[in-house]
Length: 213
Length: 213
View (tube, one colour):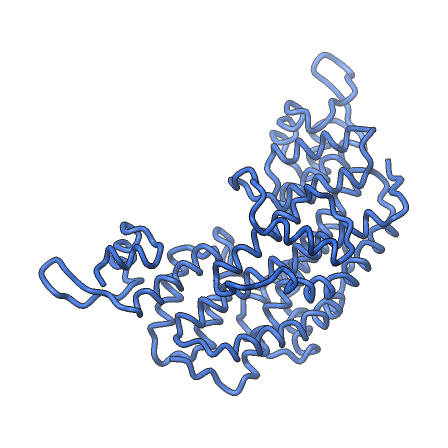
C-alpha cells in the first residue's frame, strides 16, 4: 500500500507517519520509484504498537524509540522486550535518575519473602521503594515493608490469570506482544483502581455517619 | 506563630503560603498590627491538606480551591467533602467535560448488579465507562461490562478493610480526613498496581519460553 493508505488504515496522521519514518521508528518501505515506496502489514503492526505505547502507555517518543530498538534486536528475548516497555511505563518523565532510595533494601527483602523473580534493576522495585518512603512521610511513619505482603498476595492470583491469558493469546508478532502487554497492563489496571475507589465510596456511604468537624 | 514560622513548620515555601492567603485557600491570620498577623494549628492542618492534594493527589490549584470550599462549607457532610476530592483525583487536566459515554448505561447496570451505592454523577462511573470503551477499541472488541465483576469482587474486601481502618483512625478535623483519604487512596493504589506489575514479571519469567518472533 502507499503511505497515504498506511496512514488511513492505521489511523495515524500522515505527517506523524513521515516523522516516524525519519526518526527510524518505522522501517522504510520498499522503494518503487524515486519518491515512492510501498508499505505492508509489518508497518501496520508497528504503527499499532507505537500508538499503544504512546496513547495507552503514555511513553515519550524517546522511550518508544528504545522499545522499538528492542523489538528490532533479534537477539533479545521477547520477555526482555516486554520488560523494557513495562519499565518505561513506570518511569515518570522528569523524575531524576534513580539513586537507590533508602527503602530499596527492604523491597529487595520483600521480593525474596514473596518468592518473586523480578530483575534487580526492575523499575517496579524502585517504584515500590519510593512509595514506601512516601507512605512513611505521609501519615505512616513506622510502616514496615511487610505491610505490602497482604496486597501482594491479593494481586498474585490475578496477575497469574492475566499472564496465563496473555500467553494463551499467542501474539503473532513481537509488536503484537508489546501492544497487548501495554493495553493489558494499563487498561485493566485502571479497571482495578477505579473499582477500588468506587468500592471506597460504597463503604463510606454504608458507614453510620462521619461526625468529624 | 508568625508567617515565617508557619512556612518553616509546614514545609511550604513562604511565597507559596502568601499565594494561598491571597487566593483564599488559607484563611487570614489574626491581625496583631498593620502588617502583622499570627497563625495557628488550623493553618498548619490546612497547609498539610493542601500539600497532600497537590503533591500526592496531583490536583490543580483550581481543584484544590474547590475542595477547600467544600471543607469550609459547614452544611456539607464530610463524606461529600471526600467525594469531591476523590472525583477531582479522577479528573485528568485537559479532559473534555464528560458527555456520558455510550458505555455509561452498562456501568450503571454493573453498579446495581454489585449492589454498590455510588453517586449517579461520581467520576468513577465515567472513568469505568471510558476504560470499557478503551478496552473495546484496543483488543477486546466484544468485552461485556460484566467482565469487570471479577475485579470488583477482588477489590471489595480490600476496600472495606481500608475504609474500616480509615474510620477507626477518627480524623481530628475535616482537613485531616481529606489528607488521609488522599494519601490512602493514591499511595496504597500505587502499592497495589506496582505489585501487580511485579507479579506479572514474575509469572512471565516462570513461563517456559516466549517463542514469538
